[in-house]
Image (cartoon, rainbow, N blue to C red):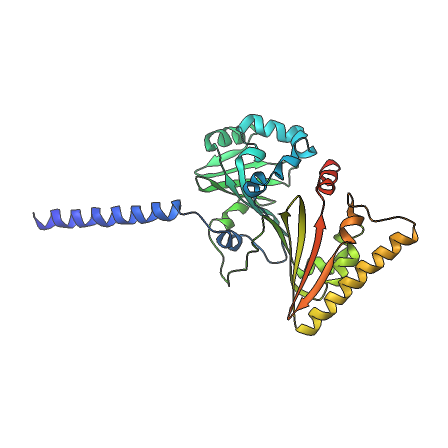
Length: 302
């Protein structure tokens, strides 16, 4: 074999190895930690839902007939793309950031139908990135496939906002809670307590000295349980937060009793008055049992 032939063969082998490495990398599933690191988490409310786990636990069936499933715009989307979250979505991680909403979605996608749907809605697809206008002109939707079963999506004023999800950010890896549903609340949101639903603002005020707050939900026998993990600046702050949460819960019980009422497990009064809290080092742990009828009532009025 001549020199030129050996050079060409070597180049071909290098190219094949590079292509193989790229294919393996692109086919490798991203962990939840890697998904989190792609999202803009600074000053963002991050929400995680393991739809597959909830589906297997029988919890997702509670969404049948909910307002989300009856929305005409959603029904049109299902008809045009064949995608139904109750059947096809396995995991969602969302960041509600000051610059928009960012989503990492894992499931079964028909990318050809999705592109056709975008075009039918007067949107455009260039390469793998698709863009379209949402329900209002300032809601610009962009999405692209990161894997065959993984979609990155953004809803922002920026037509190309999804591109920031194409690669992981820097910094230490966060601790991902081992729960099928959880949310990470930024300190800035806790200090703006007026944004919380009526009845929960007292609890949010109790957390305004927290460095990080994670609230999770998981099946527990025939019901659900909400679990709180608060990281404080020091042990004294943790003890103070636990005491304040306990006092707030007791105060809410007293207020309900003064109205000659009893906490109802089917509404927020029953959930909030059932909480228990403890401090452990810099952490505060909270626990609320949740009956399924509360979830059904919540979804029915969503």
